[in-house]
Image (cartoon, rainbow, N blue to C red; front, side, top):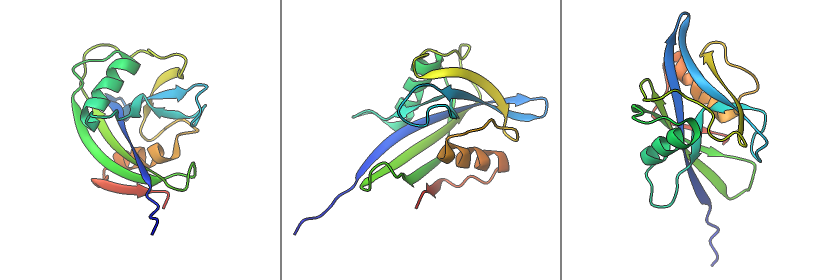
Amino acid sequence: MTVDRFVVVPAAYVFLLRPGAAGDEVLLQLRGDVPYMAGHWAAAAAGHVERGETAYAAALREAREELGLTAVGLEFATTMQRHGSEQPIDQRVDFFFTARSWAGEPELREPEKAHDLGWFRLDALPEPLVPHEAAVLAGLREGGLAPYISFGF
């Protein structure tokens, strides 16, 4: 008997948050000429979890590599299980973190992958947004983000 097994691809995301005059703001990047969601706004730091790496370590690595930040005070936000249309056997598990403290000034360190960085109020986000990330940002804005959510099923 043949059993079709699906592949799970893990990723880590960091939403940097700061207080603004009209409420919390989040730092987002405008994705560049990349295969997935080019031209969409997304988490300022995110990427795949590498073999032998924890999601927490991946989030810290991505913040350092993509933004030049260290001493990032990560707080777990949620885990998302999602299904995309890329491949029928492909599922994603995304670990989302927020941070309100860090060392350094965020700057684009991978200009070939991202064209811009910007701070946006959680209630006035730019368009277009990566859809599954928009769902997490909505939960952060509304304050009711569960520890586990699903998307695309």
